[in-house]
Image 1 (spheres, rainbow, N blue to C red):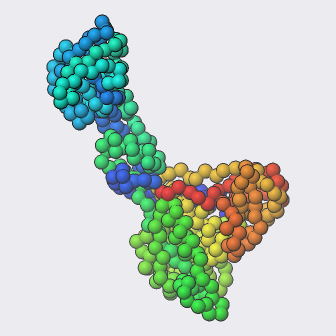
Image 2: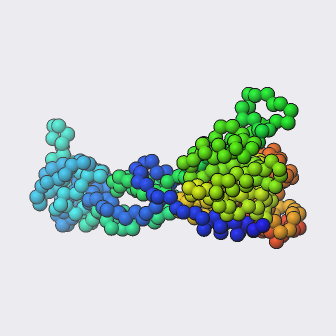
Image 3: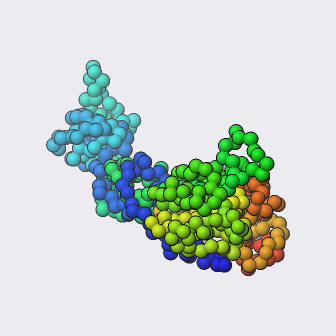
Amino acid sequence: MISYDQALALIAKEAEPLCPKAIAPTEALGRVLAKDVVAERSLPPFDNTAMDGFALCAEDSTNAPLDLPVVGSVAAGDAPDMGPQAGAVEIMTGAPMPGWCDCVVPVENVEVTRDDNGVPTRIAIKTPIAHGAHIRRAGADVQAGQELIKARAVITPQIIAVLTALGVPEVLVSPRPSIALIGTGAEVVRDPHAALAPGQIYDSNTPYLRAALKGAGFAAEAMPGAPDETADFLNAIKMAQGADIIISTGAVSMGRRDFVPEALAQLGARTVFHKVAIRPGKPILFARLPNGTYFFGLPGNPVSAAVGLEFFVMPLLDALMGRARRAVMTAPLGNDFTKKQGLTMFAKARLGAGKIEILGGQQSFRLAPLLAANGWAVLPADAGGMQAGDVVGFVPFERGAA
């Protein structure tokens, strides 16, 4: 049986990043950049005015106070085409600067004479205007050729704003892996409207896995049925062909009805590991199918399945998308806790007021404590008795979308 760290190393070794694809920045929120973004143009792309006013040559205002004629008008979106003139140009915020003008005086800082149609004809300048006043220079924000965003960055609304302002039509991102779910067990009932027969239970694993994956930005398709023998399981695997990752729940331990290892052997799959020194979820299995599909066999107890998703499947998804593994927070324990030494434990916990409280009801079949929890305490394998104040890891339930 291997350690949790050894299992993570094996997952990382098996991970083969998926081929990037090009999508529009507006569709890329939460995706991972697969290639550095280098600006192909400057931002702003031209000198423009920061406010409404009058553009002029600063030298012409040296002898202020003085009057200047208004020789033209430029609005945002215009392309001014006028040679040097003695006078000022009415200009609106964001409009390009006439080539011979090198400053702007705000409209509220001048006295304006207008004709009968309200068009300005002259302005009275009270004081000299500084060279460059109220001008936004081309490239002041982004320079053409500038390396702007590094690969592996997760695309945020802020990144989308910059990309679209630069007119970037497409970015290369890591695709989201496709995922198929297989829930095993004759006792499992998927339809919540169906009455339970003796010995049956409602399926919570599949809805949980789908919801948790969706919250992380991944879509997962649940295969129909609940296979309880090798032949049916192999048929479910066949239906899931085409998925990048297949996740099954149940039937991975050592019981007579735990058929998943035998089914994988029949398929010619390569088992990377089976059983990890963790609690809950020790029987977890990770394999590669002959076509390269990644396969996780998670234990059937619901908390074990949840742990398997967060601490085994998600690291693979991170690696496939070329992004860094999720960082583990640390904080002191707020209460004493005893665990079995030699096993890394992922405990239902609540982080609040800077301390981690490990909750009661740590058995892997008990779901209700998750309602009070907001994450997992990560308790190291070499620890047994732990005391309040000991610093341990903490992984919140909430995570960003991919």
